[in-house]
Length: 61
Image (tube, rainbow, N blue to C red; front, side):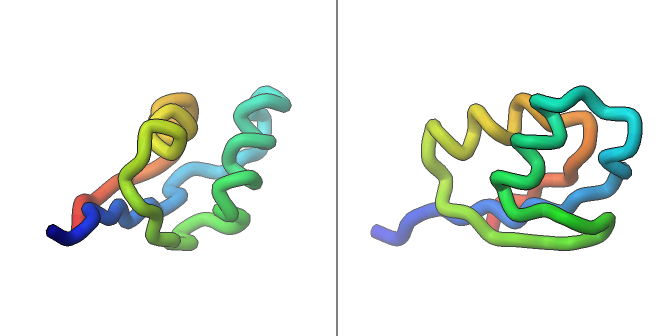
C-alpha cells in the first residue's frame, strides 16, 4: 500500500498576511509564489494546509 502524497503550490503573496499565516507558510517551505513542494498526507500537514488554504493550491498525487 502506497502512502498518499500532496503537491502544494503557493499561489498568493505573503505580503499583508498575519504573522501566524506567514510562519505556517514558511514552516511548510513555501517561500515564493508558484513554488511547489510535495508532502505525505498526515493529519499534521493537513492542519497546516487548512490554516493557509486561501493562499495555496493542493493536488493529490
